[in-house]
Image (cartoon, rainbow, N blue to C red; front, side, top):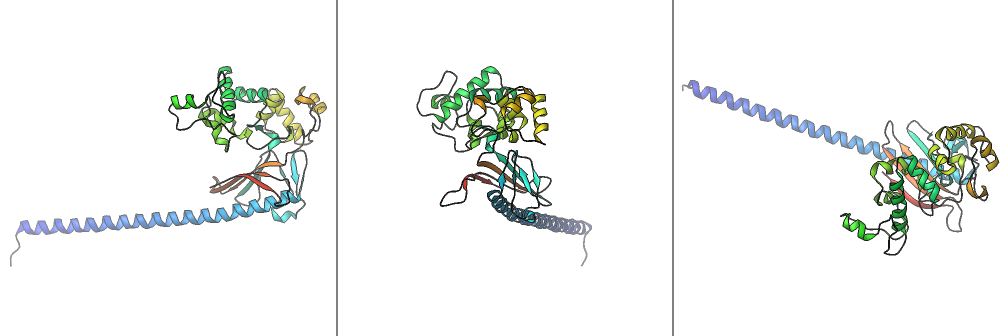
Length: 308
């Protein structure tokens, strides 16, 4: 049987096409396998990180409850090998407790409360972050309107009618905030400004002001001092905790309003705890607000809990 020249060429083309399909399917299958392996490895890493984070959190809680809080840190009374450290600062500085595990603890007295805030302090925080006079007035009035009941708004504030007119998918809560990110919804607050101040404000109760656990930005707002003065104060407190207004006056010529009495200069029982696992970026994190005051039912209370 004779094969024409044209039919032979067609067979070659068909063979090449089949070969191309097989190669394409093979490459696709190989890619799918690689993606599945990558996903499986990611799940494995996240699962391991989750176990490490929960373990570090439980160990930290036990160490905090058994330890003693001073001006700017908690000194542990538990064996050092539990976390590998003898103490932890209360100013949100990261402390490594493993190759890829970092813990942070922030005293609420070193932050600015969003509930029952000091008007002058809050205004300075906003202005220092770049908010103008008009914008800060709108934010403060709108924040008060957000948490207070009633339909009437303040001069620079905002109630339900404003958010509906702006096409927002929400209205004022008319109750205390349930999570801090709500603050970013308030009239006058924009994404960039919120990012600048979010770490300095808290929904946890504050019993006073503790400069020993405050950031430079919070020191500037509370004491109405310059950044250079705040840095000088921070440097001093790394060696010696500040315990009185008299010491503050000597260092920065400023003092805590109201006489600096009561719970000022001491940590609050309310703390923010952050656990990060993974480097250079966290694979898994836990963030919780806790109350370390013992009650007949529980040794401590969790105010809020975030993970992921």
